[in-house]
Image (tube, rainbow, N blue to C red):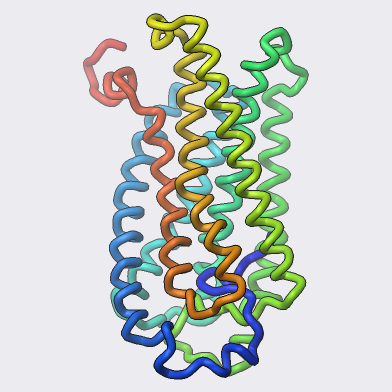
Length: 308
């Protein structure tokens, strides 16, 4: 997993040293962006918590299908990330970090972990649904629930082993060695070398290509179903399932593609750091993805005494 320093990316130290105090990334501009980030993270924390609470209530009676297992993993990913959001809110509200460098690196890295893990589970959900649509004769696949659980366990084991190693042994070491102000956080851009820079380019392009292809396939699935059923398409179970999958695809397009498109340019311009922070924060709005499962049946389930 390649981090881009979270709030900045891969820029030579010699260029950073030439920046004047009056450059674009001055404290004046930073205060304005911090206020925007404070609002964004407050909204994400509030709405994300409500979204997850509703979804956890719904999942109590959900079947243990492959998609359900992927959704449960997605819920857990959002939950772990939301635990770190209050620290970001505190930092942008006070403009001071008082929790130590190690915890700064953990909180800083979590926004990327959240994005990558969400992407993985989105891809699993979409491919599962698309496979069921394009290969109806193979719905009873050999890939059973036990395999889905095994894949989930493997993914989390890799994350739990690799991420702490990256964060504590490679992430932010150069910044710390330059006696970075202990009251600052999320400023690790110049720590990544040229090799990691290339990796970041590859990851951004991969994100955009996979997201675009899956969104196009999902839109085509809905087009085919609409052409087949026309007026009665909304009564078809397949149409409803594919419509929810399209919502996931659109969430990927809206939340991930703008950031990764901008990152391709940002990798060569450190003074766009504040803009990068805002676009990175916008990726966290995918915490609202659980709202795609809400509908009339959901409200009946949440209201006691209502028949489904």
